[in-house]
Image 1: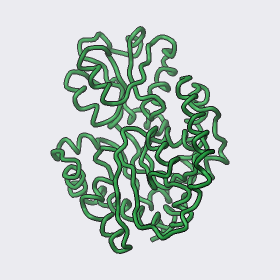
Image 2 (image 1 turned 90 degrees about the horizontal axis):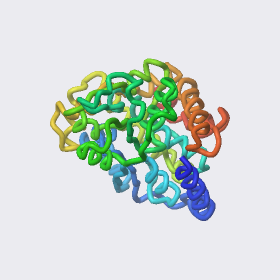
Image 3 (image 1 turned 90 degrees about the vertical axis):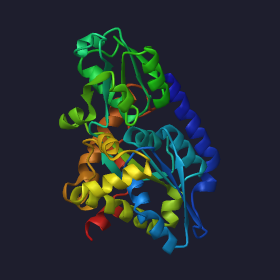
Length: 334
């Protein structure tokens, strides 16, 4: 935990040194840089269906995609001005908020389901939560998986009874294959190879049903958003198309995402799992971005502060200022 707090301090120092030069973009945008996750999500589908490229082509703007394994690196890139948009787990969005990174949350890519979860090795003897005591459990710290794991351990009075290992997703698979760990809370596509000789003890869908929502979200760099709100709205409109089609024609959307990610259809469908792709209209009607999700971020922030993964719990006022829900509101009214 202390390592994360030190990282946050380093992030803030970088922000102080670079923030002045990245506050505004006065020139017309010639390129948009989008930080992405290597998962079959709405961005992957919109890329394959040419929604994003067609929109930006009309604006004479090039699109560059940059892959990040975690939101930690995406936040660094937002600070340095190397990207304009970034998809990440909501816990890293809380990190961005509390680290005073100049960015806004503008979109919810998906509400997590069984595409994240706690996997335990078959034959390990772990049949229930009590059996986790004394075990080594890996997860990427400061991620949605880390938060979900910590909430689960707290609920079952196991916070001080397990050994937590901070690993990125590739290292988790390697450690699992070597037999160094018996359990890990992580996300797709990491889950797929682990489930070949493991099984879920709990998933983020289970936690969602317990009103502990986690999600992947899109942040936009502050300087870009202030100077190019039309482009922000344009990108989100393309992502919203895939959310609508995911509900009306899921086969088309999944096929597009699978092709973009070079996956088989069934594999992409499995990786998407039970995650929810809410349309802008649904977010507005359900008051998701204006009420439900801010409340979840408030709960998340309080818990992360207690666990010392962030230096302070964000207030509701800070969270509401961080979420620029006007873009979703405008889309929902179309």
